[in-house]
Image (cartoon, rainbow, N blue to C red; front, side, top):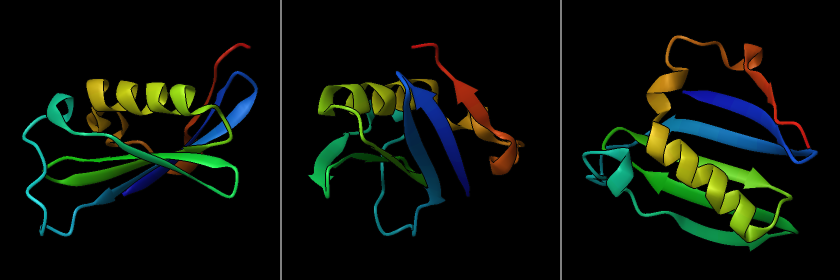
Length: 95
């Protein structure tokens, strides 16, 4: 569905939003979605699923910072990205 690249404290953060395959019921609202996190090859990963989407956050940040970004996307919802082109989304957060 979309890929957004953010900059947070000087680090790039990848936020990937895909459609759910429908096998998992997900949660009716993003605020109820459980965030699962882990690490691979030095990158932090966090993921949650709603009734219609899977959202993955990958970065070189600390686990707590990566989870903070995932929580903010869960709270504000992915609807904020609807109608936007992924390649035109680039945000910068002052360090």
